[in-house]
Image (cartoon, rainbow, N blue to C red; front, side, top):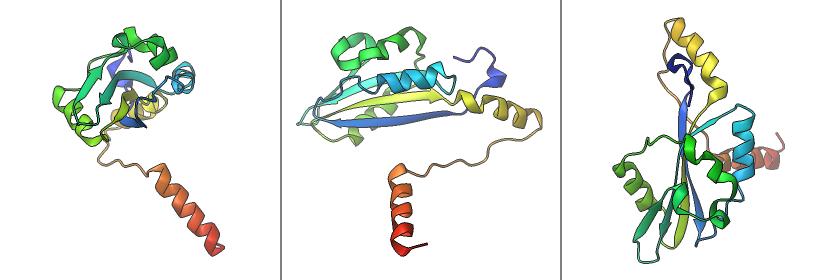
Length: 148
């Protein structure tokens, strides 16, 4: 995690759902690349497996074998426990029965210097948002169809 709290970047989280138990760690190289390039710092990472009947199990990296997580094991010692039990329960409720999911929390390290400059200038973040990739792709496709 960032050594100087004044230089902490914005923190985001995502849930990546995989049908069945198809999570196999194949996303690990790209996540590792983001960390190695200094763009993000992984702060927390959990795995949720939800049975067809809706019951679920939560696993940390140490609970899973190499075939399921691949290179993700390298993040094991660096993780903080940021998510509450209620957070995890809410995520587990949101994923489809019979699916598995990765819950990832990361710091946007690339934005830390800018955030620090804003704070030192007396500013603060008052709103933030995200446009889902699917929505962006749909808008681009619509624009291309209209010939704009």
